[in-house]
Length: 191
Image (cartoon, rainbow, N blue to C red; front, side, top):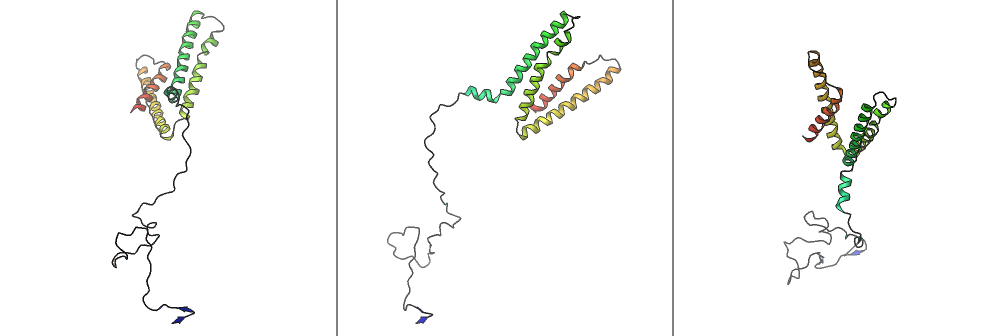
């Protein structure tokens, strides 16, 4: 029989099934109730793990020795070490300036000597600000909260103490304000 130029074979038509799985021994034809597998059945299956491409060989690892752990400590604590050194320099210059000014109370240069401790203090401030700019977002948020609590608590205590000064308590010098702020900042940071 011919349909549109094609001939239909007569008799039984057999199809050969190609599988990606090896045939079990002794089985020439699959059982009637077994599902037929196509060459691409595994690629579309959500139950079978597919393998990705093999990685490209990048060569052997470099033979250079690892850096010593000391460098890691320096990098980790660089801001704290530099700030500590700047504060040490500030204290040394401050003690020297106070000693010179007290020894020469009428000298014309005493104002210049009294201003000398500001130089290491400015260096300490620059190191502190650079350390803050190296922090990530969550650390910046923690520091901002700690600074806010420190400033607010210091303002509350100093403002409240000024009322007690009016009724007879001794005067609180302004030099105690910054250390009080640092104490509150450190306390809030550790919580």
